[in-house]
Length: 71
Image (tube, rainbow, N blue to C red; front, top):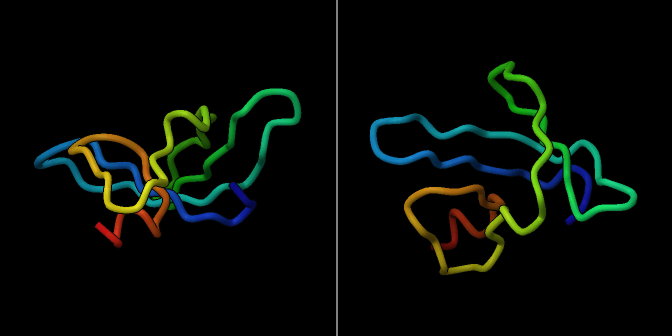
């Protein structure tokens, strides 16, 4: 994961997608900090929470922009 990677939060039907960007990478733990575009507070997410496998989407979760739109 690199700084500037676009992240999409999908929370299920009838809830709008969240769009954000990686702004910080944890030094000692596998975490990233995502700054959301809609003005929400930045969020720390574990790398295991981010689905970056192209073609393997589930209905709810956090995805890299590339994986989300490739599915």
